[in-house]
Length: 301
Length: 288
Image 1 (cartoon, each protein chain N blue to C red):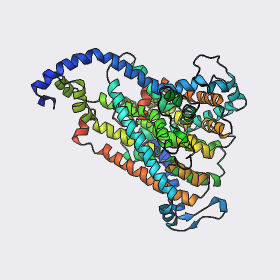
Image 2: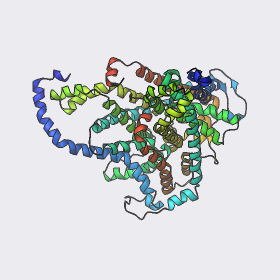
Image 3: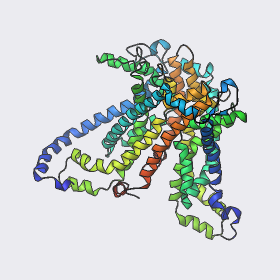
Image 4: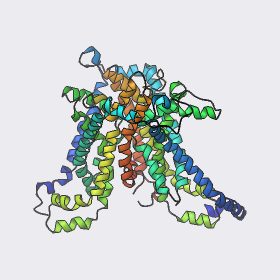
């Protein structure tokens, strides 16, 4: 111990130092820089250097229809996608939560949508959604059901994009819920079985209440990611038709890299960051303060 | 809770249960079949159409039996130059994983051993911050130091994407290593660095491989950083397939072939290490 040398004596700060420096350079500094640019008028197109204008960009945001629309669409997309993902994900987890042949195979399949390259997957859905030649409308037509325009229609585009997100990320909710189910205590279920409770009764009265903390965590994790959805929206619709699928992420991207108005884009980014961060704070709070109920469900803590 | 049920309820429950037992397996099998179809269908559709001619792709009702053609794959590699973009993606992925491990492993060890929550929070924040909030300032910054158009800008940003995954996988892994192992080495007079190199790292192989694969997959899949920071010379595969549809006529067969070429390596990697990947992805949502 005594001859450990410099590295040994200072390991506590030497070890995390490179990662912290890296995170500072590529994350903290850029965020602070964005806050500063959001207070400047800066258009790359004009070639003029940034000039300090105070809260002007934020005042403009308040009156910007397109910005308000983007907020609304971001929330709309997130609520549909995450809402269905959680309900569907928990339901699928309950179905899979029993030993049967091929269970491992099924869970392997569930991994694929999450890991597949989102842009490539977006291209496949683009082909499937094709209003006339696509398979989705072909199936609907064969069943004599109405055939929506999917991503080509102003009304249907957000739900259609949400469906792609649901396909990609419901498995995540399933896997989290399965892990939560595996950590539940077995005694309440044994007691219920002895008392003759049916499967549905014990799911409704025991499993779901015990699962609440797991479901809350899964929901928050999905909320944080769904708000940030970019790849599938940008590559499938570019925010269209018109602006009808332009979410905050796409809106700020267009402001920055299509119009090159960095000052204005930065103010959007600050607002966007604040929204995501506040949800994350809720997440940390839920994780850190386990009420007694949560401790039960989280068996191994 | 269940103890509060009345006797009448219990007796009523008995016949339902026998019905359930008979119907159960069939209903369960059918439900699982529907679930699998939903999650597999887009993959099958992608694979099927990648072997079809342009006419066959848009023919309805779709032909399930047809003469497969490899023309789409030839097109993807020959005229679309996908070989080059695959190499780019591998370079960026490998570079970013290398940096991620280099700085992530000591940090993860430090978090695991000395319970440094602040460090953990700072690194996990990289998973929470919207990429676009970083992209605008980083683009400006990289332009000033002439790093746009280089692999360096892609490797650095992708390393930031992978870092939280590496740390998420490695912290529980390091925590799981018995303290006695390390203490034994220290008693024998090994320094901390020697202990790490000779004792900790060799037994951490499976964890490191999982962390590396997960970080590599997220670098491979990354679109947002690449579409802004990459140009023709450094373009990665997600940007390449996106450019595919920017041209007037959509070549669906070619597009699907490109999608297969991009997703296949990722899916193979994912299935190879699936058990660990689940815990890495769910990012400590449930302990364990």
